[in-house]
Length: 339
Image (cartoon, rainbow, N blue to C red; front, side, top):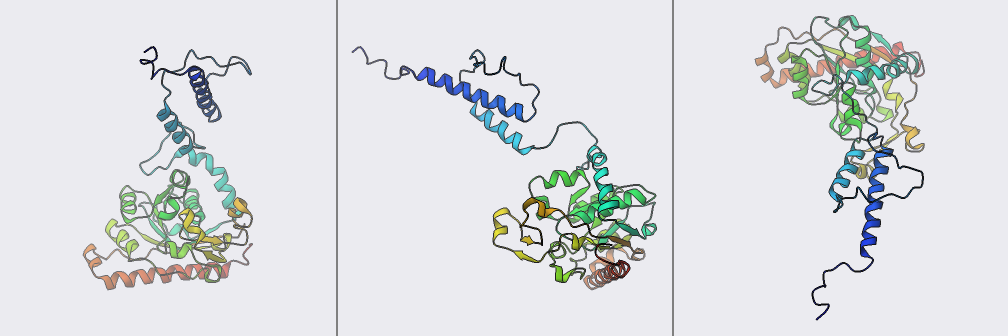
C-alpha cells in the first residue's frame, strides 16, 4: 500500500514548529548569558532582527541548558577572579574590599571600644573565648577586625561560626572569605597548629538564641572543648567580654513553626523583623565595648590531666565566670545602650 512505509515520517508543518522551538531555546540561553554578564555571547546583528538557524544543533542540549541554569543560580552575585585564598576560604581580595565597611561599622556605627588587647601574646597564636552575642556573627567580625587593626601581630583571627548559620543561602562563601570557619574541634586544632589565632563562642546556639530579657547572662558552655584545645595545642586561653551586640538584634520572642520551612532552628522576632522585611535585618547602632581579660593559667596542666572530667568541668566553669565578670564590667563602663 502507498502509505504503509511512512508511519514514522514527520507530519507536515512539524519541522517548522521544531525550528521555532530551537530558536526560542537558543535565544533563552543567549539571554541568560547576557543577563549574567557573559561577555563571550555575541549580540544580535540588529535590534529586532530575526535569528538565523545556521548555528542550530540537530538535537538541542537540554541537559546543558539545565546545568548552565544551575551554575548561574548557584554563583549569583559572585565573580570569577584569581586571588590568594587559603584552605579555609579566607580571601585577601574580599577582605581588602570589605575593610571600608568594617571600619565604618567599628568606628562610626557601633563605635567599638576595645580594652586589654595587650593581654594577647604577640609571639604565638591565641585562643580567644567570648560570650555569644546575637544571631548574626557581628561579634566575631568586629573582634577579629579589632585584633588585626590594633594588635602588634597584625594577624586576623578566624572566628568560628555555628553549623545552622553556615547552611544559610550565600552565607557560607561570604563568611569564609571574611575569616569565618565552621565551628568544630577539628577546625580549631588545625588553625591553631598552623599559627592562626581563633575566636570561639562556647555558648553556641544557646547564646545566640537568648531573648532580650536574658541578655548578657551567659549560658552553660559545652563539654570543655576550648579547655582541651588550649592545653593540647599549648596556646594561651584568653577570655573576652562583648557588650553591645545583644541589643543590635534584640530578640523579643522566638517562632518555631514557620522556621522549619526555611531550615532554621527558630525565627527570631525583633522590633523590626519580620515587620520591615529584609530591612529588619539591619542592626541597631548600639554602643559596643569589647574587654579582653588576662589569659587563664593552663601552662602547668599536662595533656593527660584532661582525662579528669571533673577538672575540665571546673576549668570550664571558671572560664565562664571570668567572661561573665568581663561582661559585667563592660556594662558598668558603658553609659547607655546608645553610647
